[in-house]
Structures are given as C-alpha cells and as structure tokens.
Image (cartoon, rainbow, N blue to C red; front, top):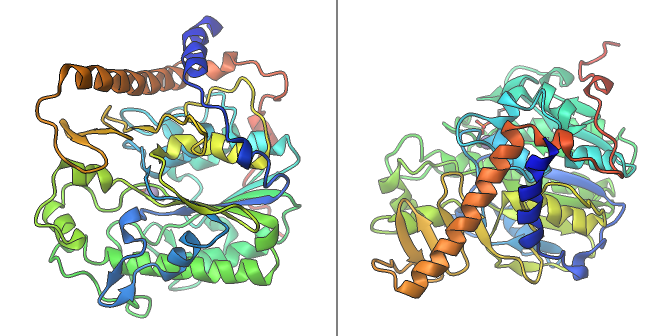
Length: 428
Ligand code: GP9
Ligand code: MN
C-alpha cells in the first residue's frame, strides 16, 4: 500500500534539485497558456528552406528577450505519443513502456495534476482541442486531471474545409478557441492542442505557402509545409494575445510534443539535416523538440540544460510560485542550479550532459564522438546515469500501474472528484 511509495519518495528526495530561486514566483497569479505544437521538432527552429524561414513566428518568440527557451529539450514519449506528452507535462509521470497510460489508467487512477493544483490555487482550468473528446480517452482522463472545462470539436462551428487529418485546422481552431478563452474567469490555465502538423502532413494548396522538401520521401517532404502553417497559426494567435492585452497578463508555455519524422526515414533525415548519413547520435539529437516559456518581463535567454517533458511541471510550478510539497513528480526544475541534466527516453536510452546512449551506441554528448571502449571510470559514470534512468522509469511505472497516488495524502490538496466535471456541450 502506501509503503510502496516509501522507496519512491526516498529516490525523489535523494535526487531532488532545489528550484531556482531566481525564477521563484516571478509570474505568480498570471494566466497560463500551454500551447501544444503537434509533432514540431527543434531542428526546424531558425532553419530556412529555399530562402524562407520555416518557422518565422516561433523563431521571433524563441529569440525574444522575455522568452526562456531551451535548445537541448527532448521529447520522452513512448507509444502514447501526444497522450504521453500530456501525461508528462501535467503530472511529471512518464507514459508506459507499451500503450498509452492516459487510455489504460486515465479514467480510474488518482492523479495530483497541474490543472487540479492550479484550480485549488484560484485558477480556472480549460483544455482545447479540435478533435473528438474521446481521442486518447481525454474526456475521462481530463476529469482525473481536474480540468473544469474541455472544449473539444463539438464546441466549434465546423464549416466545410475546417478539418484536415485528425481535427480542425490550427488557424481556425486557435481563432475560434478565443471566444471561450475570453469568457474564462482569470487567472486561467488554458491548454491549446494543435493538430495540423500531424503525420502524414496533409495540407491544402492555399495553405501551403512554402515548397515541400525534395527528399523524395512522400511522408517527409510535406512536413515543412504543415510546420510552416502551424507557425503561421501561432503568429496569428500571438497577434490576438497582443491586441487583446492577454499577452501582458499571461505566461505562454510552448512545446513540441514529440518527433514528427520517425527514425525509419534515415536517408530523408540525413538530407533535410544536410548530412551524408545519420548515426544513432544524430537520431538522439533529432528527438529534440522546442520548449519555451514567454512572459512579459520574464528574464529570457537560451538555456542549454539537457532537459525533457518530465521536467516541465516542477519548472512551471516554481515560476508560478506554487509549492507542491509531497507530490510524486519525477522531473526537476530545468533552471535549477544542480539540475542533473539526465534525459531518460522511454526505452532506457538517454542523453546527459556528458554522455548519450541511444540505439545501443555510446557518444560524448557535446561532440557526437562515438565511445567504442569505455575506460573503467567511464563505465562507472555511465552505470550511475543508467541506474538513475532505470529507477526514474521503473518507479514511474509502479506509480501508474499500482495507482499509488491513491495513497499519497497531501494535506494541502483536495482529492479530485471526477463526478464534478461534465464536458458535454450544454445546448442553448
Ligand atoms: C489526436 C491528436 C494527435 O487528437 O492529439 O495525437 P498523436 O497521434 O500525435 O498522439
Ligand atoms: Mn502528437
């Protein structure tokens, strides 16, 4: 029972990095927008294709003096893809080795998630997504996460041409979500999930305002077009936030949820990266996704800490000045002075400040130079990192599979009652 949590609490205590005092509460009380950039990878940031910036709006945000951006931030999803990203970002719990935790455990497990915690700190909480509510079991999992509102496809006036692939086109989805955002009592926590930049990257002629890549791989070449379109939709959203005055009163968290181009497209990946070929180091670095926190007055800059999706919750809570004593969060504040910079991938491989282990190969992270026969000392260092990675993943799986948060009593946190929420659109 709750004794199962003891070794986990011990591990988290031993490896805890104290949140960075410099960022503590600097954005306390502001609205929070969490903007989910579907399948957007870090390599497109600041990159051009045929003389055109692929993501001009995100590039501007990335280099803004009030944006804290991370250029060594990795996706850590398993088969759950978007659902794993959502699980990590709002619970600091990994997805599972197989399947999607949000589906298999999202309905019945007890969680102590960001939406529920913010709700109990006076926030209105809402999720927005232009797909059906049942995808990835969101309509149930969000009740466990404590979202007060979930504006899914049924809340939008879908006209012909408004949908492509998995859901509404991003420009329309983001534009039409604002009618609901305007009605949210402030401060609010609003998560907006885009979807146009999603495999196989379908896009209409009029929305394709950049040429496709020319690798010859049909599921890679249009990626640059839907990424460019996603970027334009973010540009339009930023204009709205500025015009409405919301930008000044809000923290914007933007993240890429996972890779778009899978490792099965090595020749095409080499071509778009301008490399002759790609090895496992290149593929590990290809797992980087954008992560930015933007707020008026925030001390910005590009942080090179090796970090990942599991670390977002403690980082954001620190910036919002919300303490979460006793929660089971496997991530660390990414800006912390003694942040350990070990990024666990779901299959046990990792990137750390010094070493990268990916696809069974070992490299120096800074240079990409392969290590073929480690010295005794290196073996010890690497074993220590691997032990941390294995413990993080195994303990997180124990929490999910054993539904252990049922036993994690927090005197400052009221257990979520799923029956309190009803996301069905009330007619009229
Ligand atoms: C589905 C959308 C895409 O609603 O979030 O999910 P993914 O396939 O990226 O997990
Ligand atoms: Mn996704």
